Image 1: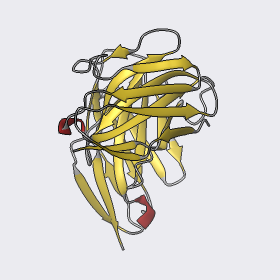
Image 2: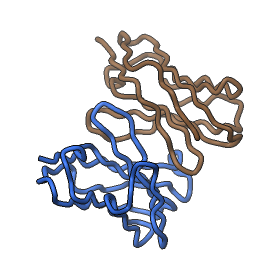
Image 3: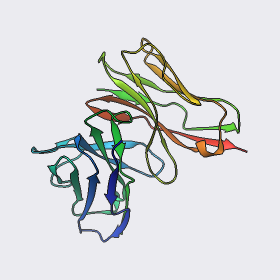
Length: 116
Length: 111
């Protein structure tokens, strides 16, 4: 099954700044997803990233705050813009494999973001 | 909209015993996939087991098995011969196009 490398694994950022999280997949995936997870809680879908088109955002998430790029089938970035302490969370990317693999989805190891 | 409900925030089990984690979901779709994922403190999401809704036979993976009741929209996970390494958060997930997760159950296996 595919393997996703997610960077950075953690960061501490000043409020008002932006952080870009990268996910690199070792094989092609049809769709990529970005999730937010508060420690000890569930994963909330932020957006679906499709290659060659704009990302599709879930209710409560907007492109100006969480711009996403998907330049090809193996790479995506999520930017957390103009950060505030409320953005402190874990962010995970996921990819849906083209061939089914281990059940179709693989996950990055997450980015723990702390905004001070 | 699809929703996934896990009604057990925390559970514990003695090593070598059996435990069942509950999950219910709501959907108007007929074809979909259900998953159980394990998330240890490392944060890595690890697929435990997967069930296609069109298959009546319950999925099994070694010590892990599911009880899939499509009419009742229920998808429970049974862990047999629990091991200390099974201690983790367990998430039930539903997939049609994208994946939605339940709130999770924190499982502790006690020695």
